Image (cartoon, rainbow over all chains, first blue to last red; front, side):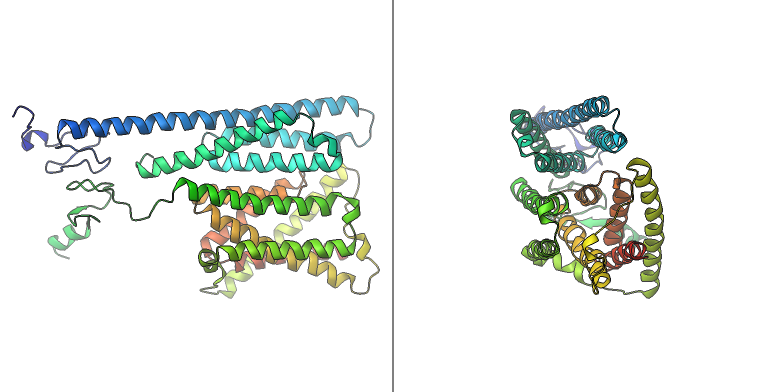
Length: 180
Length: 252
């Protein structure tokens, strides 16, 4: 009998799981579904499930971070390309026309990387699309470009795709568990 | 309203057991059921939708890149082929999810004033873009862009130009991006992210990095109009007026 807590004692208390205010006669927390008056087993099961959700989320967040870092890496790569092509074409009257698009690309990847924490799905899908377009354009200018550094390309696309998958998963988890 | 009625109005019934609970309760306090009516799609179905959109986009990239950058395809015959292929592919993808997509084709609450306002915004932004792009191209590339030179001197050239620059893109780019793509992405992510994705993908498909400064805001505006008005047609008309203005500059 020592496990039974009188209902009156729960008045104006806070939920053990999510710390939101609970009303006297609630059996379940109305913001997270925690069994306020359930057995100890129910409560432990609930907490274990919540913990699993957080472990999953941490894993997905790590994949999103890795994909975001890939975008930063691409930004750095295009800055280097821009500087190199500036050095090579210094005497070319059309040098700005070659260098500026490369800097714009670098800036785009940098911006997408920076916002990939806040809006992962939007930034990673956009980043992947931009990367594919750049690769198609490079392949058109010289088909050999497609094969050069193929392992890097596969890695970059793989990280970005994993990031997109994780972004979908994490939004689903957030919606299902009412995590803002 | 009596006190009792007010009390009822601030409550909702639990979707499982019918107990009255607070309007913003996420779970039922009595049975613990989650109070969400919308059925969350499974990861697999969302991932399939993303892959489907990806396929659509990769096909568009290949066609556009080939017709823009491979000299072999820069003839009138190939231009016609690419335009028709793009139109057919867009319609096919749009029709594949017809049940979900058809709602955007309805033009409810047609308002002539709204149409004029959106048209005016489109014309003004097109004029602004024309002069800034002209200046940028001249400064950076030291040249002026000349489009579709093979149409010059053709007796129907001007009509063909208007058809290819104003009519076809207005119809099929809107159908493809604000129609099919945005509508599909809305099932995967929230409205804001779907809007950004469809706008960014639309902008970079034009494969002109200098033009991104106006293409991205333009695409976001088109997407916002589509989401606000819940119809594709205001966007189609805006796109048409925008491109028509650009076209008239080209012909003048």
